[in-house]
Image (tube, rainbow, N blue to C red):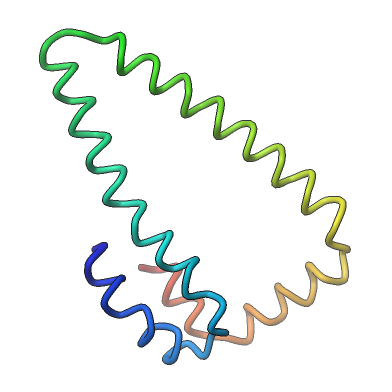
Length: 105
């Protein structure tokens, strides 16, 4: 998946008529499955050796980071984006059928 996304990121941007600034965002999304796969393999290795300490520590760190990021993003969006902006985003997404295709995938 990562290689396909890395190789086709320019085609995706062109096909969906997205701005060129989305390039690095898609590259970041493409790297996520690779990182998660490697992390899962290491978790499985430690669990197989019946050493649950690294798995537990990594899960606690992940949850903490997820909560901090979620609260920070919520605060940022709440203070910087108005209701009118949200309505414009929703209206724009509803008018583009390719968004539904991406949500399906």
